[in-house]
Image (cartoon, rainbow, N blue to C red; front, top):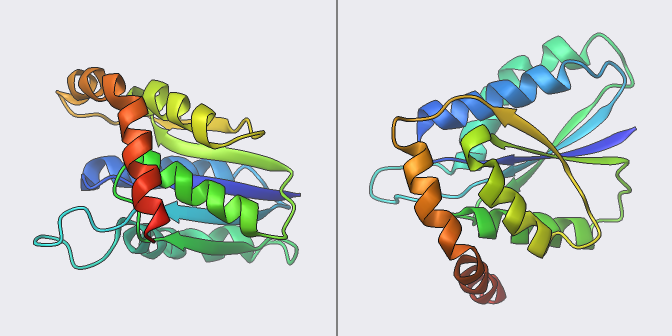
Length: 171
């Protein structure tokens, strides 16, 4: 079975690591699965960050890889890096581009994000990931104001997608 696991980044380390841990825990349930990790997240604050969210995810995940892949020879992980995306709409546009361009056939698609982020991420994914209905894996971590900001951002789903599509044309 081939799985594409789309791991959405976050520029907040606490949230990013919760998403990573949630994804690793989920993948640990599969003993004979090939997992392609679509690590989606660029550098949101270039003045503060020197590596992309995708690269941070890869560094954290690789520490666990041998635990899950050495037990069975048929179990492999590979990584696809999206180091361009800086928001959720861009994450899904880049994931959709990868899915459209690859020759690999996936049996299942999963998206990993935070529970508080799920509604907005799902709305965006429904508008971008045509003919794909991913399953959702949700981390529990959030900040004291996460739901407040999601309430603001969810009002901008359509304009966020429009801006991201314009940006994607230039990549």
